[in-house]
Structures are given as C-alpha cells and as structure tokens.
Figure 1 (tube, one colour):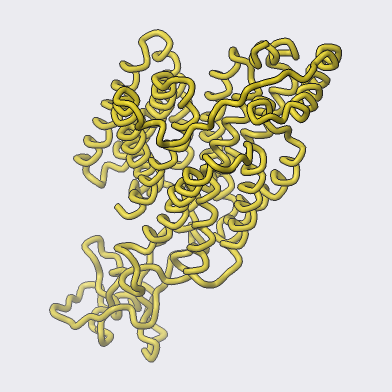
Figure 2 (tube, rainbow, N blue to C red):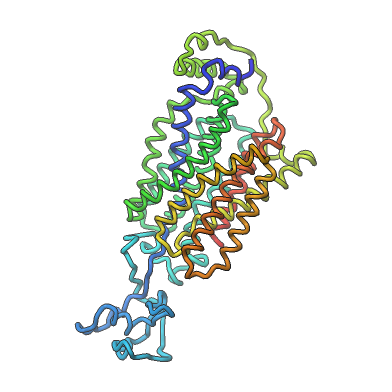
Length: 474
C-alpha cells in the first residue's frame, strides 16, 4: 500500500493533521517577525549633533534657538544630522539672521535623538549614524546583513552534510527552535555591537531549517488532497507574522524588549516540539519501520481510526538514495530547468521582495502602518495567484506577476519623494506581486523536476537566500 493511501485509511485530513499543521505553522509566523524585525530595532530616528559640551547657554534661549546657534540648518530648515558649527553663532539667535561661510565640524560630542517614536534602537544605542564608526555605507546595512548572511551560511552546511548524515526532519527542527530562542534572546542582552551581530548571524542560520523542515513535516503527514492547502497556509502564516510584528512593535518600543518579545516564545515552541512525531514516511525510507508504525498508530487514535491503526504491520521498504544539490545539474534537461526556472527567478524575487520590505522608513509614513499594509497586501495577492494558476496555468502566471512586479518597482523610482502615499501604494502592490510570484515559482519549478530529485531543490532554494545578504548592502 502506498503511503498516501495509508494516510487516507487512517483518517485522511483529520484531527491530527490539523493540530500538527497548526503547531508547525505557528513558529513560521513568529519567524516572519524575526525576518523583518530590524525595520524597528534598527530604525534610524531623526537626530542632530549635541551642542558644545563647554558651551554657555543663555537662559533666555529657547531650545530651537540653541539648535540654530550651534547647528547649521538643512534645506528643510531642520538641524543638519551630522554637522555643527565649530563655534556657536550667537547672531543666529535672531530668526531673521543668516551666516555664510561659518566653519563646521562633525558631531564630536555625540548626537541627540528624537525618542517620540523609538525610545531606543541599535542605532541610538551605539550611535550608528554619520561617520562615527568604521562600518559599511550605513551601519543599518551592516546590522541587516548579519541575520541575512546566516541563511547562506546555514545552507552551505546543510548542502555539504545532508548527503552523508541522516538526521531526519524533527531533530534539526528542534535544534533550530532552541538556537533561535537562545541567540535571539542573547542579541538583546549584550552591550557590544559586534556581539549583537554574531548572535543575529546565529539567529539567521535557523530560518532555513525551520521553514524547510516545517514544510516537509506538514506535507509528508498530509494526504495528497490536502497538500496544496497546507502549502498555501504556510504562506499565509508568514504573512500573518508580518502583521503581528507591527502590533508587537507598536506595543513594545524599546529595541531590547522587542527583540526578547519575539524570541522568548521559541523556548515554549522548543519544549512542545519534542512531542511532535517524526515523519513516518522518512522513517520508512530509512529502515525504521517500527518507529514509523508507532507514530502511525498514534495518528490513527487521534483521527478516530484506532482499529485501522492496530492492523498495521511491518512491511519491508526499500529506501531510495538521498538526493543532493548536484542532482540538479547532472543532465542537460535538468540543468536547463534549474537555470531557467529555479535560480534566476528565486534570486531576483528575494532581492526585490526584501528590498521593498526591509527599509520601510524611506516611505515617510508611519512605519507601523506601512508594515501592516505590506503584510495585508500579500493575502489577496496570493489568492489571485492561486486562482490564476488553476485556470490560466503556471507559466503565464509566473511571467505576469514578475512583469507586474518589475513595472511597479521601476515606476516607483520616478515618483517624487514628497508623494509618499503614491510611493507606498506602488511599493505595496509590487511586494504583493512578488509574494504571488514566490508561490508560483516554487510550485512551477517543483512540478518540472523528476520525483527522484524533487527534494534536492530544497537545498538549491537556500542558496538563493544569498540575495538577503546582498539586499542589506544595497
């Protein structure tokens, strides 16, 4: 009896499948919070230089006049963020006065930050503004690349070790939960920016393991008729996490507490994940039929099919060779599929998607509102893509959404910065198109691969996460 037929005999999509899927998709929602967390923890509030430490201020000077005499104004008549006068220009205490050619210098005594929206961020914690530290073009980009670069680091390890090691789905998933809980919490506990980056790197290394193993477990315990819905639910769980992040970040403003708030739940997830059964399909393929039967009988009891479960007996099964990333390049036909439908679309999708979604301050609107908008837009977009894939086809749907996304991104470049609402709406529509094309690409590419190498594309997918690291530096 085929394994899918066996699952149908034991209740099909029953109570076990629904509970199992919910327990695995809940962490994926919280994972989305971590993925976009630095929109808030690395936000750059409005800032300007502090006045001279030895300056003598008149008690008659208002705060605005104190700025004017010590800090030059920009074109919007706001204090320059990175410059101050070498000597206070007292004449500027008169609002109608002007000074030309006054010598300026950097912010030698630090910065003053606007704390009305963000009481603290990693930027205010370590003064990651202007040229105060030897970092890449912006310190926020460096902070952003740390968790993102963990993806390809983890992917390389997985791709090298998976052909020789047989850890299953559950063990790497449990370890990923623990690593994320510990490294995420530790990111909020130390006062060194370098240590913070190290722990964010370790946090990023868990993302791939959680997503891939969660999806594998859900699909392998799901009968054929429920797999499409299960895959769609994973996308919606990730979308829900983006919306949830906006609410949590709005309620928890200090960056350390926010970092801890989205990390601590993974400790609870780590504890209950021990009771989640390993994939019986994987156990059968690796000669562990006795454990597979134990799990299947538990599933039968939960689904109200106890008698069917008791009738299960050990059957010999031949394990198939494990697939590796090299299988995707062995023959000309497979290479063509890999290079045309797998690598370029996924890489470009990720680069554009996270480029739009991980720098929300540039839109000039409330960052919390934009985060919610960018999350909500994915829901109708994925519904449309699912419908068009059924009635129009995979290839036409992929091409259409990629073209629409590219058009929205390019058009957004020509919208004036003061038209903030239009820029935000265009970017949100572009992100929605990219989210839709994500689903189309993964489904379309998976259907083009032969069954014997279908698992290998999961490893290839992780190399495309390199675009996350590149995005943080662009």
